[in-house]
Image (cartoon, rainbow, N blue to C red; front, side):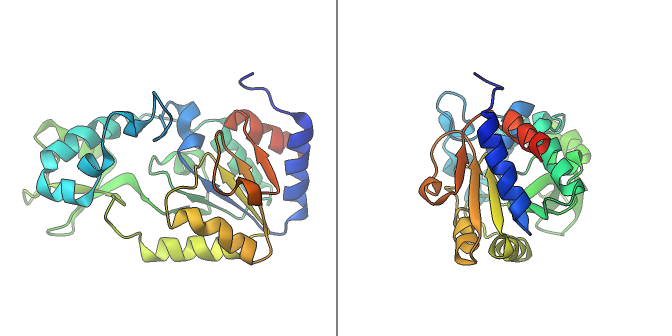
Length: 250
């Protein structure tokens, strides 16, 4: 039943956290679903269910037709800006505050970890917090970008289309962000993978760095991942309930 967790399994996860000198969380779209943000691949509700990401979320799409690109992204920006963190985000903040969590590596661009108050945050895919003009380099905050959505696309004062400061398909990750993520994963005694299918690379390869360094994996996500057979523990319940039960068990 949604919201119910196995108390023994929560205790097992708490024991892993207590035994680890370094715990790092890796989060994906599933942690934001309780905040009303659909994930990407769930049949029937996923963002990519009826949209080809190569047509709307690729850097080529932005360059070739910024108006079409922003018809898709503009709706998401307007919605995401009002979303609030949920109990799963709050649970990670509680773990960090108690000294049980070193950092959060997130694939999400929705700002919810920021809003929740996570301090040690690595946003490997960027954030919707700002958008930039690739022509003149001016950066605009989200509120101003949303105000500029009234035209065919949000434009810089120089007239060129803005690009959200997120990593689109076809773009390289920011080197400092992925380097930091790799460093954290390699040094973690426990990598806590939450709400991620672990399919998108290079982030999907971070668990191997933890394993190579002698650490363990714990996965809290609904549905299978390629790392399930290597995980010390896999939980598939409601992400809010599972993480809140973890905090309560510590």
